[in-house]
Image (cartoon, rainbow, N blue to C red):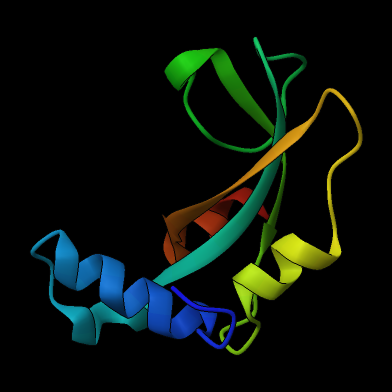
Length: 96
């Protein structure tokens, strides 16, 4: 990943790396997830891996540049961010 990489490119690369068909990238979206160590109240996404619980999720636009987003916006103290790949179908259901 470089600052010039788009979310769409990163999803394709991740699918390929994990042995999935990179042409299926349209079924997946890169999401910007903000959470806190140890979890907290409910909210969107993520498992409890490492005691981290996602609380706020935003789908990153296909042409947005995730590394630029990461550089321009930092979560408040006590919060952290990670990017996750989610199925668009799951995101659509969660928004209903």
